[in-house]
Image (cartoon, rainbow, N blue to C red; front, top):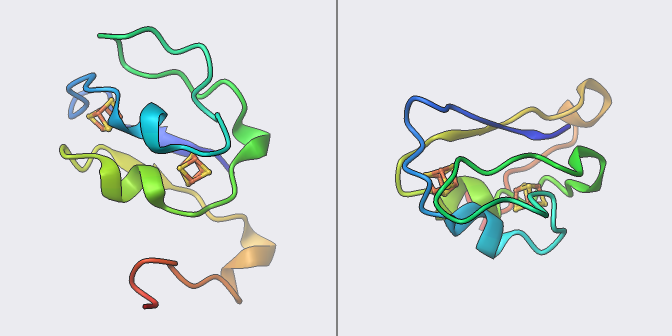
Length: 76
Ligand code: SF4
Ligand code: SF4
């Protein structure tokens, strides 16, 4: 499931779009809150979550994945 951006917290720095290897934020305009253009491509890697200096991104892990999901960063 796609990342969810809190528009109140987002400073439109663009870090999430820069770090996402799957181009989920493809087409986002510089200086604007990124748009989640391809949510189905999200690999739940959490890179955008940790790249966000404003803690404005929340990942929604699909229900069937929740049993096995381990946060790739915190799991290290
Ligand atoms: S969790 Fe990973 S794949 Fe999904 S939007 Fe964030 S950086 Fe991209
Ligand atoms: S990294 Fe965070 S603050 Fe920066 S554009 Fe993305 S959601 Fe907004």
